[in-house]
Image (cartoon, rainbow, N blue to C red):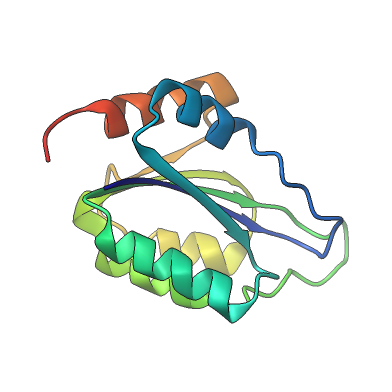
Length: 139
């Protein structure tokens, strides 16, 4: 199984079920399982994401960190912390696409081997890189 996992880390905001990257990858690579969660997700949701990550032959993980604004405390990782810890254990089969800011999450992701984390890509660039990574047949 190939997995696209989208994680949002930020302050509590109104729930949005639209994810541009997941929608585009699902259209281009219908065999890829797309799943998303955030730092406010219930433990069951994150546990399912961890199971998907463990079962995946390859996983592209998009992490979007958003801050709370000037002077505000950084959002807690919540249940996503366990997911990030599992991500570090599966480093060989993972490519992480990081955007935004969150100091603790960035430190954790920084433990991945060189070349596994791509930062500063635009949406079209992310979609292209994910498509190349998940679309390759080197399983």
